[in-house]
Length: 391
Image (cartoon, rainbow, N blue to C red):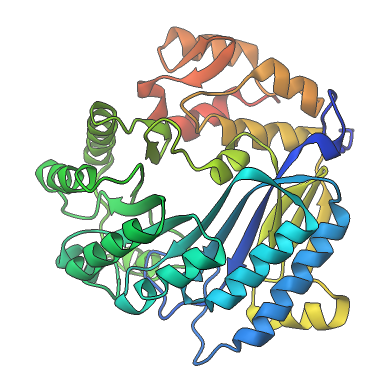
């Protein structure tokens, strides 16, 4: 029977370990056809009610995690740029009151590039946000219409310009490998993206997620994804072009100038601790997995009854922790320190024979005592993970 891991740090106590905070704002103006995130459309949102609810949920987590140093806060959604800046400021203030914030704390907020939301950027910066992640998704209006986005290409570029005036660090997202997209089309988009001066790009291939409108269209034979060979060619083109432009991939879909990587997301991928508050938020702290109520109304009910929105809190076994650390860590170009993680988590991560076989085939490599995928291996990451996970 697998042992229970009380999140594992043999060299030091839990209070020595840094902490990240994820805050989920679940509301959107509309639901995009590709999106499987926990997002909800409501006619109106009571900002004061939600401010109090998020603060209560945060206070519950803080009481369980005393003495930790907070290294990042990430407002995700949904559409967090629809939050009242006063709500953002209140959450940041409460987080700083409950934890010792690092001098260089990274505070990111996801934003849609509408003119209404861009008008809030100055106030969000004043509230304490120092990094924004903008959901451009595409530059051309035809692709934006296909993706169900409410903004135009021109509006997106205007919002990016406003963001760059107010925030020292800016990321934007693009979705590629859309049906019918050619290498020439994506190459032109990459040219434009790399010329806009941001230090970070998140470049995602379109995937058909269960439960989305695109999934229903695909099942009905009305949407055909780009074939795998063409999608792989676009992935390789992306890696080559971003590397040549000084924004190499540090994770499967994320590219940055050295030093501009998302420190918050690195906490996930390096298997660090993070508290999650807000509807549908997940967390991992102190050897426990936590999940909040997904539906906003159920979350508010939990706050009213219990003072928190938790619906699930359970210990992670050593085996579960090891499997998660492997899945997350091999997404990174730097790979994983297998020996250090096995020592910390108390369970083997890999099947050595399978790893040796994939090294010989050119899909994996050891580099400075870290196991990582090769460029060829990154194209087959899901398959590789299934092959090498310790049984």
